Length: 574
View 1 (tube, rainbow, N blue to C red):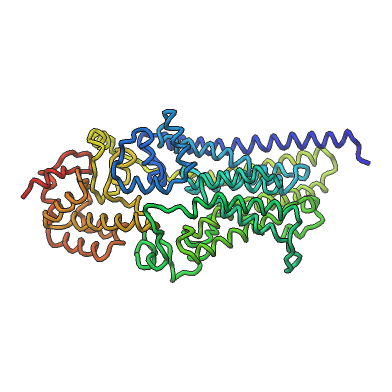
View 2 (cartoon, one colour):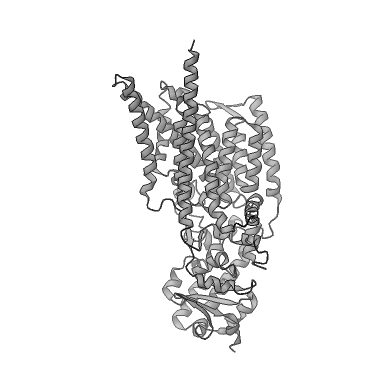
C-alpha cells in the first residue's frame, strides 16, 4: 500500500510542475506576440498583408460614410464571419482603430491557444509521467510554427481557428459536452470551417478499430458525439444555406479556364505537371506537409511510431487518448478530399489539412522528445550512483532541450514573420483623406493596395483584392482590371475618358515604372489578363500612351515616385 505522505508529495510536485509548465508556455507565447507587435508598431502605416483585405472595410465602424458604393469593401464585409466582425465593431466602439486592433488580436489569441495546447498535451501524457514537459514542448513548437506562418499574426478570421479548435479538442478528450458545444458555436461565428473539422473528429470517434475491424464506440461516446454532430449541423445551417450577394461560388470548370488558378497566378491552385505539389506539399490544393514541419524540432514527430514500440518505458505505458491522432487525421483527410470533389463549394482543400496537421505534428513531436529525453536520462542515470547526480542530470538535460527549442527559430532572421505591408507615402494618404469620401482612384501600381487602408478611399481594382472565389464579385472586378489595363496603355485619350466616366474615377495614380515595358512584362497579377497584357506591351513599344502624354499637364499631387493625376483634367482635354 503506498505511503499517503508520499502520494501527497507526488501530487504536490505534479501541481507545481503543471503551473511552472503553464507559466513557461504562456511566457513564450507572450514573448513572441509582443515581439511581433513591436515590429508592427515600429512605424506608422504598417498593416499585415491579409489584414489589407479583411480589416480595411472595418473603418466603416468608425465612419459609416466610408467606401460608399464600393464593391470591394462590400464584398469583404459580406464574407466576414459575424463573430469576427463584432469583435472589431466592439473595439471600434471603444475607440480602437481596426488596424490597431488587428495587431492586438494575435497576442490575445496566442495566449488562449497556448493554454489549450498545453492542456491538450497533458490529456495525452499525464502530469505524473512528464506531461508538463510535453505541454511546454508542444506549446513552444506550435507558437514557433505559427509565428513562421501568416495565420494567427494576421488577426483575420483564420487566426481564430487555432484557439477554438484546440479548445474543442481539449474538451473533447475530457468528454466535456457543454464546453465542446460552446466551441462549436464560436467556430461557427469566427471561422466556420473549424466546425467541419470538429464534427469530423466526432464522427471518427463513433467507431473503434480492432485491427482492421470497425466496431461502434460505447453508448456514452455515441450519445456524446451524436449531440455534438447535431449541434454542429445546426450551427452550420446558416452558413450552408446563406446566399452571398456576390455569388455564386466559382466551380472547377470556370477556375480551370482562368490563368489566375494556374501556376504563377494570383490564386494558383491547379498544377497538373507536379502531382506531389498538387496533393502533398504545394499550396492551396495540397495537404501542405512541409508547413507542419516547422521549426526543426517538429521532425521528432517522425520518430514517435518507433518510440511507441518501447513498451517497457513507463512513459509509453502512461500515454492515453492516442486514438486522438487517427481521429483528427482521418477527419481532416475526409474533408480534404470532399473539398476537392466539390471545388470550391467548401473553399480550399488545404484549409482542412494544414491547420490540423500542425496540431498533430507538434503533439507527436512533443511526446517523442519527452520519450527521447527520459530514455536518455534513464540510460545515463544508471552510470551515476548518487541521487543528487541523477537529479542534476535530469535538470541539465531538460534545460538543454528547452534551450535548444528556444534558440532554433531565432536562427531565422525573419522570425517572427509578420508579413507586414509598409505604406511609404504619408503625404499621399493625407491628400486623399482630404478629398470627399466618394473619391475613387484608378491605378495599376502596387501602392493601390494600401490606399483603402491608409487613405480610406476606394480603388477600382488592385492585386491584393483579386480574390476569385465568388464570381459575382470577381467577374466585374476582373472586367474593371482589364479595362484599367487597356486604358492606361491606350494611345487614345478617348479610351481613358470613357473609363473615367463609366467608373466615376476621380484620380489616376501612376508610379515611375508605369510606362516601362519590362515592369509591365513582369507584373505577375497582370499576366493573368490575356491577350490584353500582351496588347498593352505592344502598344507601349510602338506609341506613347495617352496618360503619359497628359501626365504633367494633369498632375494633381506628386510624392517621391508617384504621380496622382486629376481625372477631371483628363476629361477636359478634347
